Length: 404
Image (cartoon, rainbow, N blue to C red; front, side, top):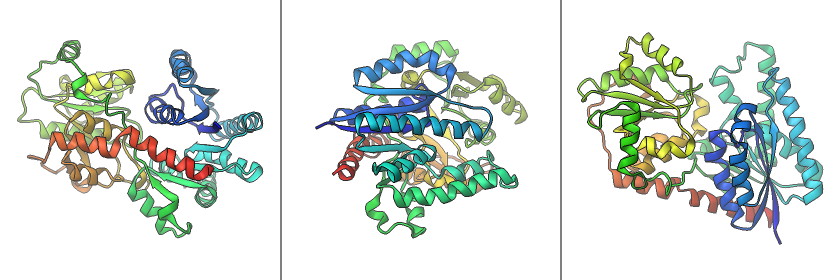
């Protein structure tokens, strides 16, 4: 008998994150006999641009996709409105299909899952993705000096305990996050109830052998970069957590002796943001290259990197963070330069000889001269730790345990 699973995501499937960290898992689990009903919230511009692409993926994999419009304005009230829309549609789908399990991604979705569990006794998996309320504060999105944001923060911290206690299972992205939750002593058996699944990667697709020399040459030609140049690469959004000025500063110091170095950003961010930060640093902007790419194009762009870099603000909430790009870069066999204090990131760099870790308290003074990088070990580490099929199998075991 097919089991109906309701997957709730406040992230959009037309966003890069939905395509890398939601759909691949659902596709893999669909092949194991689960029928998915996927609710997501789509930003209008991306939805109209990519909806046919996502619809095709869902139809091919027998996924019933129910996209809703993401409401951005006014703050807080728009989120309440979206939660109400999600709850109404979730209830309708349960009444129509008889949902066996709710898989909720992060805290907003968990509000709806908790409600359905209490009212309809539908079990739910709390796929927490990080300490969401603390991320809002650490990222200066919510200021606790504002009484409204303080009220909202306290509400979610109280709900957080409800999610942990009343969910049927919990998934943390990191072992560091699991250890932190265990220290709170609110779960009877955290070892059994919490599983660690990092941001997994399709290691077959993020494979340097799948990128031809012709593809590399085309990219270098497009970017007007010679194949003899030293290319430090950055992929993904800049946003709240990534320490752009510190990365630019490090690039300037580290590449002084390199051959005609270039800092290549593969990102959908506004190039003006990066250029302005570089000018503020007194950096030669001729060394910067900024390009936007679709998710399926990322392996080809990564393949031209000499090394890669990401510095993430080492805030409390980042204990539970797993950078998607880490698994992708390791799988491509590209050395990583990162900072410590972020989830399991540095432990994995050391374990798999995947690059260099900069002490966060010395980030603008540390002189990196050499680092331990073993390409084969890094690639094997990506397959064994970040491999998509490993993540799918772990989710499948959790589903089976909850539903049975």
